[in-house]
Amino acid sequence: MSLVTALLLYGLFLGIYWFFVLSVLWHLREYVLPIDYSSLIVRGFLGIMVLLNAVSLFLLFKLPLS
Amino acid sequence: MIHLSKDEKVLMVLHRHWVVILGRFLGSILFLLLPAALSAAAAYFGVDLALASPYLEFFTSLYLMVVMAVLFIFWMDYYLDVWIITSERIIDIEQKGLFNREISEFMLDKVQDVTIEVPNMMAMFLKYGNLIIQTAGEKSFSVRQIPRFYEAKNLILDYAKKLIKRE
Image (cartoon, rainbow over all chains, first blue to last red; front, side, top):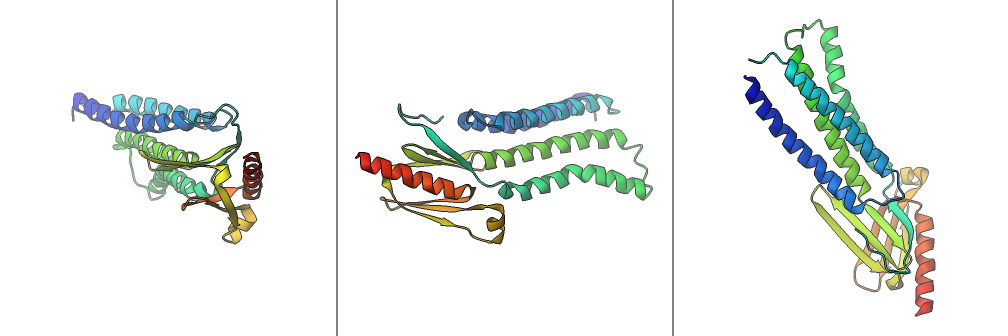
C-alpha cells in the first residue's frame, strides 16, 4: 500500500473518530454542572486520546510503505 | 442548558450509583489490556512477531484509541443520566446512547407520594435504591439506582410541603 492511500484511510478514521469524541463533548458542554469533578475526568480522557492519536501518527510514518 | 428561575436554587444533583458503570468499566479495561496479554502470550509460545511488528504497533494504537472512545461514551452515558432537585421542581435528564436524550420535569407542588425501594442485597450493602414519585398527573417518575435516596426523599417532601403551604 502506498503512503498516500494509508494517509487517506488514516484521515478517514480520524474524521469518524473525532466526530464521535466531539459529539460526546458537545453533550457534556450542554449539561455539565459547574461544581463538579467531571471537567477533570473529561480532560483526562481527552489527554489520553490526543496522546494515543499522536502515537498512532508517529507509528504510521514508521510503517514500511512505498 | 438548564435555566433556573430567579429564586430557584439547586438543592441536590443525583447520578446513578457508581456500581452501575463498574461492570462496563471493568469490561473496557480488560479490552485495554488485551494487546499486552496477546503480546505476552505470543512471547510465551515463541511466536516471532518481528516482521509484523510496525503494523501491530500501529493497529494496537488505533485499537486503544477506539477502546478509549468507547470508555468515554460509557462515562458520558452514566454522567448525563442525572436528576436535579431544585427548590421548585425536579428535572430528569436521561441520555439514551449518543444522540438521543429525554428531559422531563415536574413541579414539587405536584408531588403526592414518594416511595423508596432497596431492590436487593447489593443495594442494601452499597447504599443505593430506587425512588418512585407519584405526581398529581398520571405519570409517575422513577429514579433508579441512586445513592442518598433517603436524603432525596426527605428533601422532596420538605420542599413540596413548603410550596403547598405557600399556596
